[in-house]
Structures are given as C-alpha cells and as structure tokens.
Image (cartoon, rainbow, N blue to C red):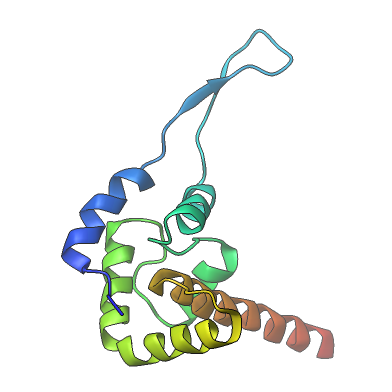
Length: 135
C-alpha cells in the first residue's frame, strides 16, 4: 500500500483549506458575506479526495483528548497528523486491511484517522454525560 508523502501533500492541501468568501442575498436587498466552515470544507475534502480528516466536533475533541498540539484545520495540524501516521503506520495499515476484508472498500489513511479521533471524541462525551447523570 502506498502512503501519503507528507512533504508533497500538505502544500497541495492547505490552499483548499483557506476559506473563500461569498456574498449571499436571501429575502432582502442587503448582501451578507458568508464563508464555509472548517467542518464543511474538511468534510467535502474527506468525502471527495480522502486527503484530510473531517474537522468536526468529535474529531477535534479526539485530537484534544489525545493531547495533539493542533486541533484546527490548518497546515500545523495536518503536519502533526502526518507525523502521527508515520508513528502508527502499522496499526493504520492493519485497520485498512480489516476494513477492506470486511467491506471490500479501501479507506484512505486520513479516513482511518478521522474514524479513530472521532471515536475518541465521541466516547469522551459519552463518559462525561454518564458522569453527569450519576451526580
């Protein structure tokens, strides 16, 4: 399996992560500037290209829970994730093989990271809710 080269991918991906601004008019004469969120941009990029994880609430909570330094959709975070991939390459490949054998679908490395950190963030919230309900 071919991995993603950190030095090649981050400069390619980061320009897409910069929000663009549009002007929308809805039911009024006044134009209102809007920008897509990091969550929307990263979900689109994950779904179409598989080159970044989706920076949604649970994924970000998972990054923080695992003491990752960067939890925003930016170059520093992507570099940190590529370092995480380098350190955990064998486990990521095993996860890819397991999913492929069960579903016949190949998940890119960033989808594996998305699932991993999302689950950590989700589990953290469940534990917090359980703790709060006991009080």
